[in-house]
Image 1: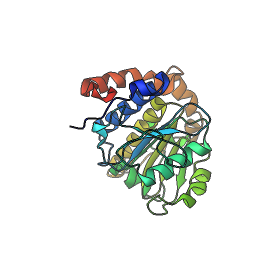
Image 2: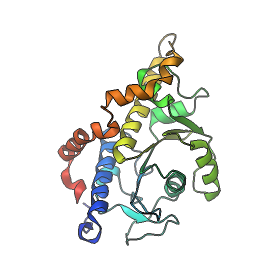
Image 3: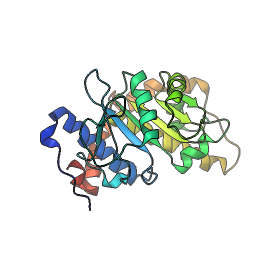
Image 4: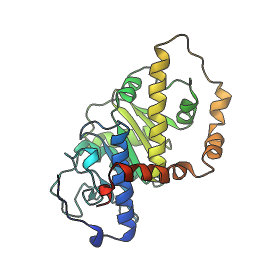
Length: 252
C-alpha cells in the first residue's frame, strides 16, 4: 500500500475539492472497466489564468489514485508541488493541448477501451444507430493517428480537429471527452463508451437501422431535459456515493 502524505493543508479549499473529485473520477473509471493499466489519463484545470492543472501520477493504477497523489503541473509540464512520480509525456501533450485551446473546458478524460479503440478503427466512425450515439454525434470530432502523442508539434493539429466539440475520437487510438466540470466529462465518456459498445454489438447482428438525422439535430435539447438542465451534475452525487462505497480512501 502506498503511503502518500496529505496535501490538504498545503492547497486551497477549492483545489482540494477538485483533487477529491478528480480522484473519485479515476476510481470510477477503474470501476467501470475503462482503465488501461497505468496508461491513460484524466486532467482538471485549476482556477486562475496560468493554465495549471492536475493529472495522474504515471505508474499508479487508477484505483490507487488519491487526492494527494495527483500531480500539479504548469503548461510546460513543470511540477508545481514535488512528487516522486513522473507525468506521462503523451498525457501531457494531449491534455495541455486541450486546456490551452479551450477556456470553457475544466476536465479532459481520455481512454483506450476495447470498444472505443475498435470503433476508432472503423472508417465510418460513430454510426447514428442508438439513442446514445445521437448525444455523441451532436458534438463529435475526429483526429487522425500520428503515433504515440508525445510530440509537441501534434498539438496544433489536435486543437484544430477538436474545435468546439466535446467528444473526440482519436483514430486507431481511443476516446476523449471534454467537460465544463469533472462531472460533465465523466458523463460524456459514459455515453461515448456506451455508444461504442452498442455499435459493436449491433454490428454483430442483422441490418442496422439509422436514426433520423432530424432527431440528431435536436438532441441538445433532449439532453438538457433528461438531466434537468444540470448535465453531469445531475448524476455526480450518485457517482460519488458509489466511489465512497468502493473505497473512501480516494479523499486522502
